[in-house]
Length: 358
Image 1: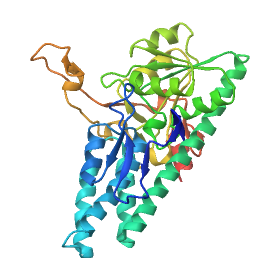
Image 2 (image 1 turned 180 degrees about the vertical axis):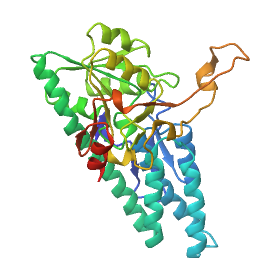
Image 3 (image 1 turned 30 degrees about the vertical axis):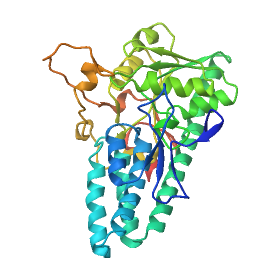
Image 4 (image 1 turned 120 degrees about the vertical axis):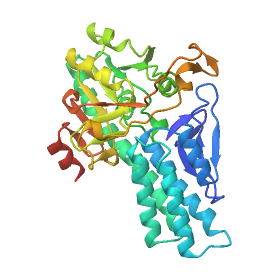
């Protein structure tokens, strides 16, 4: 768990004293306010995911799992609470949850897992235990990603004679994006905690600025040296020997090792490849979608134009201009040095991926 003030937090947790309450950190409010948001219905969960109060592939999946649980509570407490009616109503809610953020595969994976549990154990306590177990498993996966990714940072530190290892990251793939630890940032935290000298270049990550708002906040809170940069500065830093490696997260990975992540990731991979800099994507095995083996098969979410044309309600573009706002891009496997997973580091190719996931 990460410490904020005098208390340790996960990014999502269930209130055992109030079975109908799930708590999350409202990430829209950071870094200026740390606010806990209570979700009491499947609609609350859908809105939190869609409006990005919670975001990051593993956390979206965890939230959706609790959404299925809350849906079951809601429908099983009504007048028409026969098993068949409840099951069909929850399945309808589950399909809606899946539509909230279509690119992140963990969302559909978690929803399908929970509805599978419900099919055989149509009981609120069983679904509660399933959601809690899913969260615990995701936290452990992130911890193991940290353990496995630490190896590449240790190797870089050794090659540099103990000098600072400079890591560039894009978007936010820390504990806020997961249940705990993080994916891309988990190895960074472990390296820092073990006394290795690390420094993180933090892309601001327009248009929602998850880098400047969330990643910078996380790293500062943990005491990790970091520097905020504009999204297009990474190439310059790489050209001038100021980046030792790139580590990013992942929202969906294909069976062939291609990685969908926040828009701009592909450009970082191209720059890293051109400058001979290792490029890693960190992800739990739950983020692989083995039904997809080509980049073009991944559905890319398009978000509201207002995210680009305004900042905090202030318009920064002329009225009437056309706006395109793709939330993700896909980095082809050929540009990726390795995939840091909870089961080890594998090559970004189909043979290695299938061996790792199976």
